[in-house]
Amino acid sequence: MIKGIIFDLDGVIVSTDEYHYQGWQQLADEEGIEFNREINERLRGVSRMESLGILLEKATKEYSEEEKIEMATRKNNIYRNLLKNITPADILPGVMDLLNELKKKGIKMAIGSSSKNTPVILERIRMDTFFDAVADGNDIRNSKPDPEVFLLAATRLSIPAEECLVVEDAEAGVSAALNARMKVLAVGSASKDKRAHLRAADLTEVTAEELLMMN
Ligand code: BG6
Ligand code: MG
Image (cartoon, rainbow, N blue to C red; front, side, top):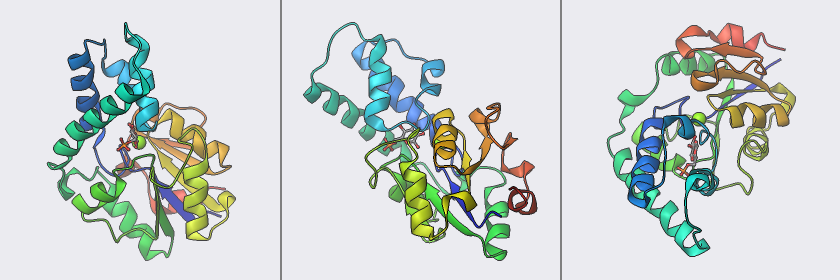
């Protein structure tokens, strides 16, 4: 039986993914590095520094550690500026209905995100007190596909991993959930991932009953 549900944040609860893309694209343009939406797909669920590593695969020169930190900071500053536009209206379709239904049924819910910006995003969408637990990029050493963030979220919910379901939009996130031995619902960009136990284009397509029946 599913007793706890762990939601990824970016691309599952809220559409910050376009702002991540814009931040990386601007950085790549400033550095004269080839970048596009296809490469951007590989950054979903991956930490900031690892994302930079993927972007730098197309670089024509070597960058020092100091330069890499400056570039990641520059991207984050662009991203943080764009985040000022986020409001509760950016919560993705079906999210609030599903979450409220789950809450009524007494299901414990957590956020499990690689993002260090999780607290600021939750505040902007006025969901900073909604979840029973939050585990994010500030708490972990290894980002998805490592299961660390989901295992920490389960611990914080006091629910065994086998009784948790993860909702993810990233291939790396689906891998992380499977590595944690959790069930996984893949949505959005990950909705074609056959490894997931359940798949949907978005959360308007799933009901609380359907999720809780998974075993
Ligand atoms: C994930 C996003 O949620 O967070 C990734 O899917 C992003 O694209 C990662 O790189 C880290 O985010 P941040 O906000 O710490 O730079
Ligand atoms: Mg995501």
